[in-house]
Length: 353
Ligand SMILES: [Zn+2]
Image 1 (spheres, rainbow, N blue to C red):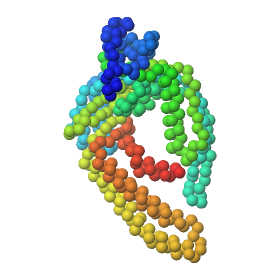
Image 2 (cartoon, rainbow, N blue to C red):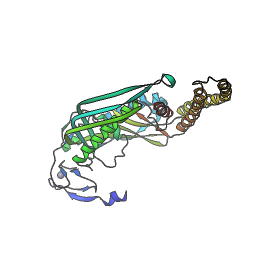
Image 3 (cartoon, rainbow, N blue to C red):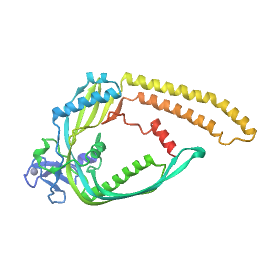
Image 4 (cartoon, rainbow, N blue to C red):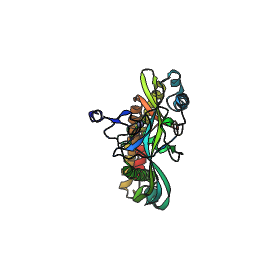
């Protein structure tokens, strides 16, 4: 933090002579008065803007509508009645639009069935085509909903940048150059492809995703942040001005939500215990059976029961933990964003092995 504050230096615009501060990490800067945009080493660059579809009023109503919809699906719609929205705030985020051809290849297996009927299906594919990848041009982009923002830009039409299109909102400077943007675009796209593949495959043995870039164009994109208060807490909703849609929002955890989670948790605990109760009997029958010789795959039954029991107990603890949270994160579709340690995630990971 201290590095950032000491790193700010005063600068005078080459074009309009207005003084303004530059950050120590800035690589490409835009004059907030005339819009003159240049690389720190000297040359002017022409750049693009994604037009902003919202104003304070429409951003406000977009967020209210979304809150009603998302609260109904999660914490209960009663929340919305006592919510107070603060003034929506627009910021122009620096991004690069990297476009080019891509070539991809993957090879691996998908496991189907289990036990004796287990089969491995070979999955292999080669693909190529056009792609557009947006890259955030900030080094420490810990802004709320910024990943969702960049992904949502897709093929939104651009215009050439002029300062009057920014509605007097802050225009952030770039902390990376276009070489860096291409490197990041390649890495991000490949990582995303890998994650998508791992969701449908048990084992990924070979994977490549190459972008052959043709252009990397510096662009400013409109990002809105709307804060609201509920009881004594403050919560955030991020909205894209480029699409006019909500990206990600926080919702307060209500009593109704806590009670629901608590019931699920108790239910899991009881079922988990039932499994442990029957385990000794199953083991007894199993040992009786194995002494007479022909056991086969029967040993899987007590192990299966044990695993299920442990899963339900762990799930119960995670669910009750979830109900103790102060807020939840909800995506554009009104679905609660999963914790990295969620029970379905854990089952998926174990199941995939
Ligand atoms: Zn200027």
